[in-house]
Image 1 (cartoon, helix red, strand yellow):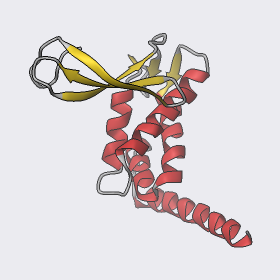
Image 2: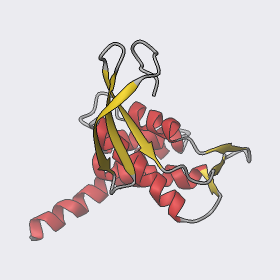
Image 3: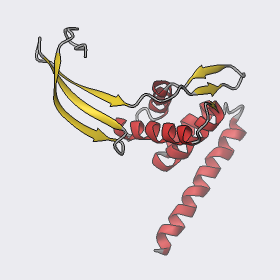
Length: 161
């Protein structure tokens, strides 16, 4: 593994542990040249998954692209990087469990919004405003009302306990 600090190709594994229900191995490595420590993740390479975009174009599924969108929507919000990564893992797992080689970007967006709605309302609204391309304030307002009504439903369930 190439060291991100000195770019030499000699490192040793200091620690390994499974993460994400055993589907990923997290490894702490130390460069034998400069002593720099860094983390790598190892996962099973799965069959390519194509995403069908809104315009009909197809591109390979890119979890980093999804993570960047989530990070942007959760900017300055109390959502940890670990939680955002868990959302990406969960969405990717749901998409791949469908057993299809192609999936629509709309479906991926819906999965992300479902997860964000449970994590942070503002991040959800931000993601939805870009994903659903709100055309005017009415559409934005209706989406906010839906979130508020969903929260009222949660509050009444919590009070019933």
